[in-house]
Image (cartoon, rainbow, N blue to C red; front, top):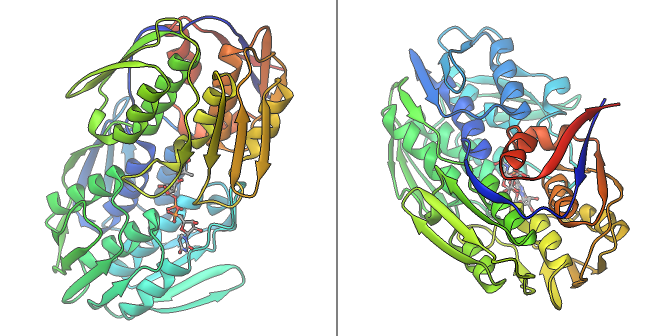
Length: 419
Ligand code: EPZ
């Protein structure tokens, strides 16, 4: 077993480079199923979730090799088992992203129904309704989604909620469907745009990129191609918040400031001096204590829910009151109790965390509960007086590439310890 041990009080200083985006590479690897021939996906981060997705495709019969540190070569021409088993899906909900690609290319898919996860019920009803609108016959039996379609056909489908993976599943399915598909109320996250660019590079005909309405003309075949994954804006945002919380000064290279407009605005409100170039972001806190900032999560281009837990840690030591409102997931405040154990003064009322910033947090043994909650605990440990231990750190490894190495590079006293 491993835990992370942090001795707090060191302002982060220096520069690091962002890794490829987890939430872009997962749909892109799944989408490679629809391509004929080989795709080479570049700037792939070394994350447990990526390994899980790679393993899922290999189990199906996809010829997939990690051909050097960050590139993955994929050929999905000979899939023999269009199935995502329970034991894989239960470890990674994003396995649902295999449904659309398998159905549109092979006419059949058997995907274990993703259960909920720590942060919420995470239903996939919109995914299924959209595929049925395209002509799929879907039953749910013994915990599996069993989907069949001679050939999907185009449709006009309005998603009742903005769903990132729902948009991605239906978009991929539409690329090989017969005729025109119009998808309304689509997610417009940068990761959805990156997937769209990959599909277009494979020969897909998609209009409305980056807007809530996507129009797709189905084609007969898509051809594998090279694609470089965008930088991970949530990893970048997490490190910027850590630097702000510790009063430090960092630069993140290979980062796109256009993907973090609202997050950078909130960091400036908290007192950070931020300068950007087209592919880097620098933050200087000048040793100051952060000012409190109110947060309201909502689909892109609003404040990203995946940055909510990190800002709770920042607000926990800010000079005043703040309110953090979580509007997407029903249970995304599990980091709060752990922050309270470190001395934070926070009250939960429904989907709001009311935070009274304190001058100092105290190091403590803590437990991670989900990916972004674990990032919040790392940030709290970096600012706390004394030693913080974080258990159940497998959550961190799902979404952050060698987080302790990058933080060490920035002067943090953090290590991974076997126990
Ligand atoms: C994606 O999850 C991300 N995961 C999540 O990142 C992110 O938090 C979330 O989008 C919101 O931005 C990946 O991209 C792999 P949703 P996703 O479908 O697509 C409701 C992280 O930390 N909904 O956008 O699964 C749902 O209940 C992870 O990196 C339905 O009602 O989330 C929720 O309230 C966590 N029916 C809302 O939509 C559906 O069929 C958003 O969920 C689908 C969704």
